[in-house]
Length: 89
Image 1 (spheres, rainbow, N blue to C red):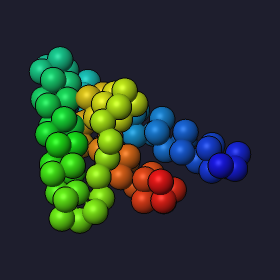
Image 2: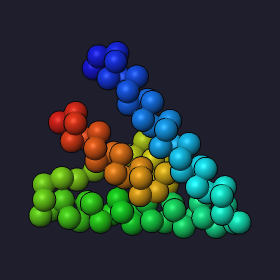
Image 3: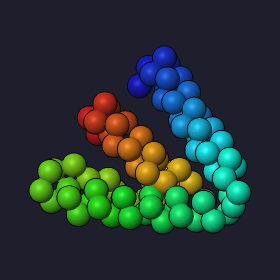
């Protein structure tokens, strides 16, 4: 992978992370929001893998994908899908 593509992916990852953190702390209860977002991310990952039988697109569950799904929620799952589609992995 070329250097500019790595910089682009790291920049997008940091941007998504900051946006999620800002939205969590704008609410009155950031812990409850984080737990809800984490649950939604895990459910979205499961839904992608179940739908993968029909669409051919699935995400493997490992430490990195699990971390993104728990820490970022649904934006993390969407980011993983976009990266997988762009990289053709």
